[in-house]
Length: 158
Image (cartoon, rainbow, N blue to C red; front, side, top):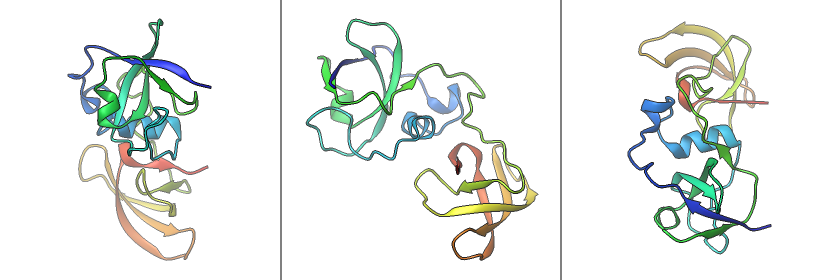
């Protein structure tokens, strides 16, 4: 089902890190939508997702964040988006859930693009804000290693 969509005005100065702690609106969209989609959500566009775009359904006020290419993000005309999945409400605030709270025994992916599941074995240190050093074990190989996890980049596993 096509949803007629328009880009929200006045959002280009909003920096994700300052608002919610994510490195970008694309990272915010990926984290909260759980979408593995790589192509722009605009019907007929096969470009790669490059931004998390602030949009409205045409004729409505509620703001959403969806994955678009830069070209579709810059259009002023309404455009069709092919699905409701992958839409993230733009109701962000500090601590919106982007900064993962990690505990021993949790299973995570090291970053938003990783497919390797890691079991957190032992907390080692927190050298910088929102950064944690962990001893982890690969669920696939059983190999243990030390990694530095950036909280807003960690994706929790099911």
